[in-house]
Image (cartoon, rainbow, N blue to C red; front, top):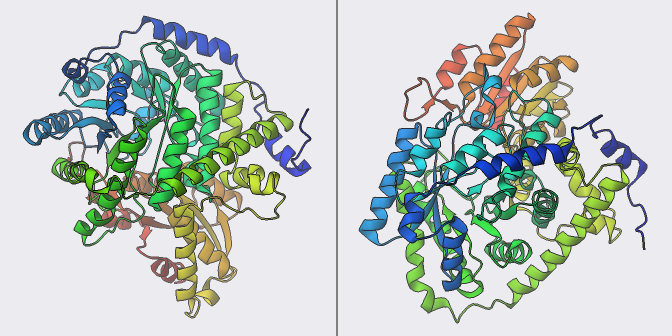
Length: 592
């Protein structure tokens, strides 16, 4: 029986307004990629040779049979040479300690994901740069630790080039697909962007039998914005539908940054494993530790919450055998680019929890976790179906991955969640009731409430009342900007909220459109100084006077050969931009 329509007229028109006027033949793009994939040879890396496997999946399936986690580190140093040395250091560490660091997740500069002809003038973020095929190969052939090329690869507009180069270098996990919803600088044509991603999916589809897997990381996509953690799994079902059902390639799911409750996290992990695993491939790419709880002071205390978390994961893998890997995060992650030794210290501390499994194995009551797992599976299936039905109802061609991705990227994630959430659509609630309240959302709301309480009795509410201010984040991080918007609106300011991932030109266009000259920008990805220079340069070209306020992480590479980023607060101030360290500091400087 055909389902009755459930979207309001307003919601249907909202979605329909985002459907592109025309899209190219997606099947032709996919087939072009497939033909490219057929010609590629995936090299044997030192890792595969050491373990006698033809793919990363084959290695992971061996660990799955034994109930052992696969261990992974993050590496995002300043150069290809440093990356290669980090791989060698991890190999040496394995040999000396008997540990098994199997993978190193690569974190290149974000413009790796931007085609070369579109990079001119773009701000440079932290990390190394991948340009030529030999750059990928230098890393993959450096040691018996296998690189995973995920960030800024298949999910960004340069997906075809990065997919070809990473596969030929021997890496058979690629992604992160979920980042197609991020704003790629210099790439405003979303139809073209998504066409390139579909073409790259054709390449990986041609390598299905060679066990090439497209990885999804929900916390780097819309999962970072949802108020219900279970919603992220429904969105990931949509990603799997695009990757596997439409584009016929392998898929796996990763998450964890923004999840604090260990019991809920394990339940979500097990639910995802049940949904996305196949007979010949784990459904989980990697689990990420809670990064919300990191302190930026007394850093050694950060061992105190990651070790209990990983102990629970070791026990869960011992029992349920999902084939997951775990990506450890050093204690310094919140304040600086971690050194190689800091990466190795944390993975060693985490791996040693395996020695205590037999103490705990019979003490854990898994029943509540398995019950929640089943609820999450049912919830995510219902919401995913709501999304498919609702998008089709609004006129979206849900059989066309290009059109589908363009529409999903254009939607406000907060509106998307509310529009399709089962508590509203299926249960008839007036307001959304999360199955699992998301930690980052809760933390942001708690911080907002604390700031309002702390500042409401000061002089600032009267001073900012009716003041016109534009607020935006220059990267994917939204929490800081969201708190600022909430405080200003509570105190009566007229706020133009630009959301996140705005390029410098977009910030100025937004401010000009609304006639605003006070502009607040949050930055965290190491592009602070080049972003600031762009703002000043474009403001001068427009012949307009603005007051720029910047906060977040004021770090950048000052010189091309720098190995570590530098605090660039002084340099930004010299450009005439006002830097702020707290919400109160911002309010004080805004009202002078």
